[in-house]
Length: 82
Image (cartoon, rainbow, N blue to C red; front, top):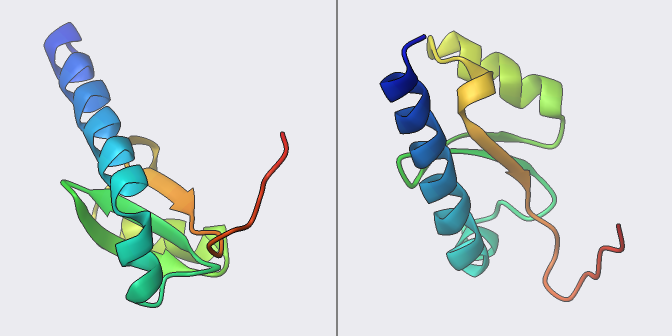
């Protein structure tokens, strides 16, 4: 993969991550709470309670899950300690 393509993929991934965090409450309102959500170009393209199901849905859309932002939507007020 060319360097320019790699930079573009990283940039898109970062934009989708930012969009997810800025819009998490909207995602909760739309019923994505307690689900993994795959975001591409600021659009949820797949979701599910099981990450393997989400990955399969992404692959069915002829997308590479390695290049798609996927995150879990925790309920509002849930504190995660890492």
